[in-house]
Length: 486
Image 1 (tube, rainbow, N blue to C red):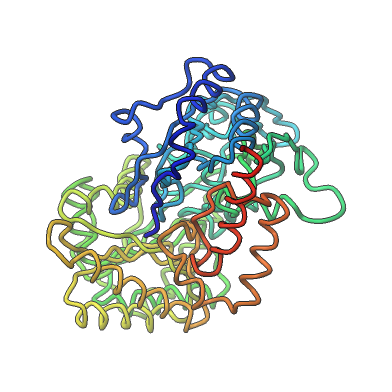
Image 2: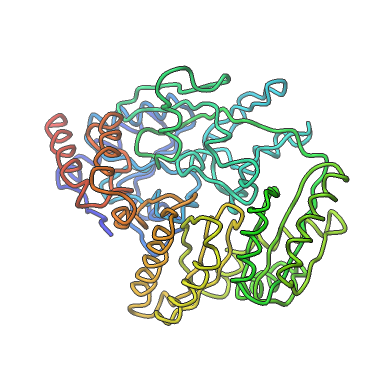
């Protein structure tokens, strides 16, 4: 991991920089080393590096003022939402200023006739639905971290969630953003009517991992709450059979609102944690359908018929709202429950649904090869895998072994026709694996897009692209910034 220490010129000007930032954003600058350590990592906590300073602006204009100063001083900037990134997306470098959006959490406008809501980027995912729930609406993308994760981070990583099988991921529910460029320029992309004619710049920004600008506001699509919903639990004797059942459901043209997968290690951990009443089995599917009572009954009938052809251990329909809540509490608590019993690294490869049995078998074989356990919990309906590799953070060499194991899993995802990430992003975790999916010419084109938005490579620059590929641009950007600041 590259975590460069501050350039001596930057160190010499640190006090001056802090003074300029405080003048622009009073009571929002943190530069005490003891306090900046709170921002040294995100949820990929195996890697950490305290930043030069942290700024917590409250408005778009304050973000613009901070970026303008950092641009003039040639200081790198790392955007940060809630710090829930599992790919190191908001991990700083020692010469960088972290711009945190936690204070920017307001709902700015609600438009029910057009089914839209406009929020500041620090607003948490779940609280968006909470703000419109009383009027019968909800915001569809629902990452497992939705209680904590911020909408700005969701846009940066194009996050999905359990219900993205039916409703799509962030880009399918994003209508517009207000964004601050690295030089402090404020731009609006899309809006209430969506993207105007021309280049799809909104599509470029969504999933760009904070490398093109800092999103400060978002206009989002909200949807009427469905008439009803019901999850079912389906248990199987093996993960491979459960994966084959998922492929059969999708192949039959049945599109539930969600199909979630958990294997035995994850079932055990979540059952102890959430007491959801999960069956004792090797693999479990949570399948949820929506609609009116007749629509729900028809869908569940089709799903039951398909599942029975795979000889399930148990097929259990939820009978009450409380039972449904407990079923989902178990799934939503999976990462936290596993964290209570073991150190782990969570991956995020995506595969064609038809290859689920093959990939699950491959992961099991790799687990034997590396001698590390793995728990599988993921969005099975769209093939978004989340293997949790179990390791001992205090055992020398275990982290490196875990990383090698994870890299092989992600290469397997690419080999079967999938990709390196579904919703967590590339960050620092997968940047050196980008060559497994993209040719050099592909990476060059992607880096040229960043050149247009951030010519000096000051925004989250040590992320996404392999360090060898991006080094010339980052070095040239630093030289240009130094010359201008001198």
